[in-house]
Image (cartoon, rainbow, N blue to C red; front, side, top):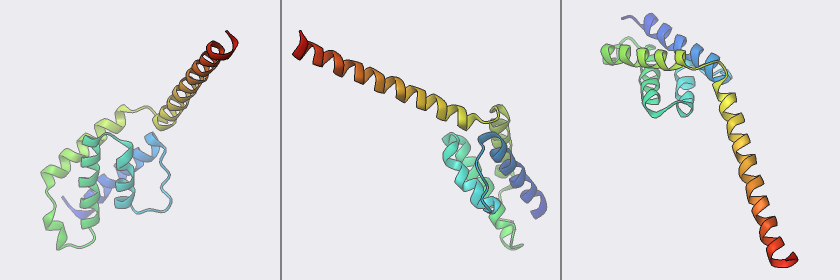
Length: 124
């Protein structure tokens, strides 16, 4: 595997992260972007993203390229690809909306309990 193919793999995963999770790139290089995306995926996929990010950062220097474990890199790429292709577009937005609606229901329940307690204490 050459440095160009490793960069291509990292770019492909970064593009999938940007498309599926809707994380803005904000001018970050690929390695830093993949490290930033770690907190938005499960731990097992986050480890694989870190492997890809480290390999992408090692492609700048030909001497460092020898330190890349190509079998581990291929496994990391396949794992990330499988996980990100399985996600629908905008999954981050859907998770946010689900969390907001869950918080609203919890707040309404607490408010109803407080009203019920006040009614029992003072108006009964």
